[in-house]
Length: 446
Ligand code: NDP
Ligand code: 2IT
Image (cartoon, rainbow, N blue to C red; front, side, top):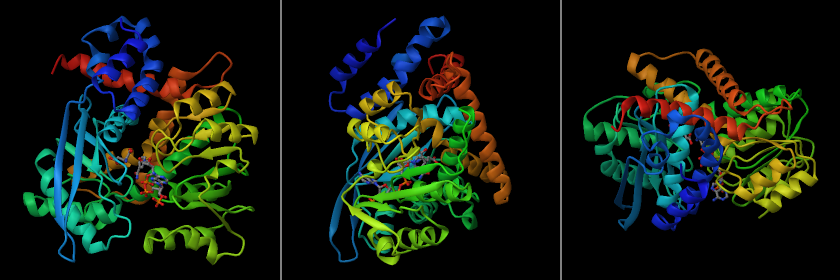
């Protein structure tokens, strides 16, 4: 059997410019390889080698014309990583920073995350270097139409089912769905995150944030603690951060921060429902900056260009983007007393930050478990589409709670240590791997 060093070295040679993909592979394989060593069945059929190579990568040019008649060229990708458990499933990200490395790491992670939900979904991810910031709704729509023209051949309800991610919310899913419908002449479940009036599921908008808090509650209970009055520091101010905060407030936790790429919003005595209403108005309706929220409330401060990690807390919830918490941030958080981290964003900690916090005994819930509520409700949306049904919000939320409890149990089964504490990173990686690997072994070399 190869060692992890062999695998990382060969990745370095074959794909030298993909550090985020390497980081995601190292995280999964460090957990999985000792397990595979003990279970010979998983040493068959080159499973570990096969999982390093996506099933298919689609890369394309998107040419679109803005409202002033100017022509723009963007790049688009869809990485279809693995469909052993079902059709490829995973979000689309529109952000100027993305490249193939971004989507390879995200698609790889998605395969194991989707496996953890217990729903029949493979893993994929895609998007574009298009920057929606500052663009008119009409220009965003024009871009979405041009993007879908290129992507539509490769997706379908039983082939690949995209959804939202950074820069792609309900508005963009609406434009993409409209474009797909025009191109294909079909109204079907090709995308999730649709508005309920267009075949979407109730509760999809809230699912990632709410699911994060449900998982965090289980983590705390497992370690004989509870969420009430815990000081929580949250980063990001997008879909995931906002609904994480909404649920934290409902559970009487104290939320001290949110952030966006302009800086950190600080609520010294904790955010209130009134603050959250302004945050939703500014971020969701006006598509403005967090700074404007601080200007609207005397008891809020804005710290320009600062991350939230210097604020003392019990629980930190990174909910913005990958590698947003480095080793220095981790040291500051630990010096200030952090005990739990719930990764709501995908891979928000650098490898060094993770290693440092684990050494200090901080409990880390990894993203593929913590934020799986979003794709889980996407899975429920697919079921509703296939059955031509629309379930009430309470029913969807009950199912989401059950799924998060199931994911937590799976992490405990594979991650519980002798002292009763849980290594959630090991637990989530092994539990996800076993599901995918069993399906791959069953299907042979297909
Ligand atoms: P949004 O686009 O709604 O919000 C992203 C937030 O993060 C914004 O506040 C944005 O600030 C900030 N941000 C993004 N990129 C950067 C960056 N490079 N540097 C600093 N700040 C940044 O995205 P989501 O809330 O949907 O996604 C957040 C995270 O959660 C991502 O990691 C995503 O992959 C993950 N996730 C999302 C799911 C979903 O259902 N949407 C499901 C599971 C995971 P600004 O507005 O200033 O750019
Ligand atoms: O990272 C993720 O899990 C998502 N962006 C959601 C994917 C989905 O298909 O709902």
